Length: 394
Image 1 (cartoon, one colour):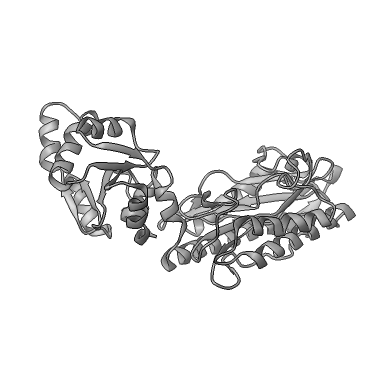
Image 2 (tube, helix red, strand yellow):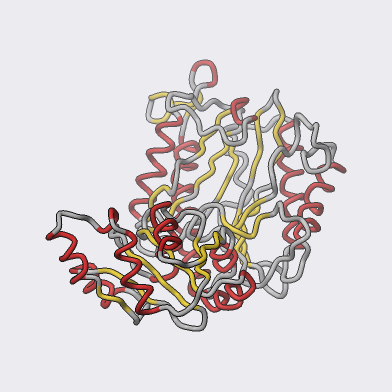
């Protein structure tokens, strides 16, 4: 949360932090300012103050109306002078940052995130300040969500579940044609059809794909991040992994949901895979709470799978089948955020929001994966993506 910035800055040994970008390409900017715009702005915060936003012209007017940051620095006069010299702000970062920092900053050590433009880093150094790259400071601050953020992720989850439900309904309504190919309204059902249905449903709910969408059919789903080729055909009896991670267009927060469905009856192997994934996920969620060691949650999942006869890369790095990826990841303004479930010794804290995605993958079958989002609490984790339970067989 924003309240974590000062203690994290003190621990990192920095007197201030500088971030440059816009809300659509630099999520840190939106998180720090609440200003949703494609305009480039600069956020500057000295330790102990509430931060300020630097911009000029109409952008500054909109910041006054839309940002929750109340302190601003007007660059209009400086930018006007540069324009008269046929120069742009990005060509003169030493001039822009010198103007801000000499008037607003008395410290010596400036922290910057790892995505700061090199021109900004060099300019701050040339102004005589020590620069320290702090790649995890903002990521760690963003890892703990406020109640407002959790509500936004819940809204994203609602839109996601509703979108996936529409796509699954297409599969459910389909008929089995030649070679077990699914036919929807008499036409072979493809991955592209499912993705288009998902995109339309998301847009109707003021959301959009944060990246791409995974619709992986049959054996191709053995590669757990195979996105699915547009012309891939859906067939009866073959598992279809639908992994959707849309972003709310207004609030910018994401959800991450996966369902695996099969049109028709399940093979014995697929049924065992599905039941094992569900049991492993339940074990992990039972362990997920404030203060839990991250790897204890991991192991709750992997040991269930092992007892069910499925390998995992976590227990056996040489494994070629079974659960081949991590158990999950933090979510927020981005699909993958802290806390990382690979920081095994770290602990979960109340306010972390996790996508938990147990899965099993066999070359001869493909994959089964089920994913939901959870807010970590003092007690049992609170599920944010509700619905579409037990939809494996259609």
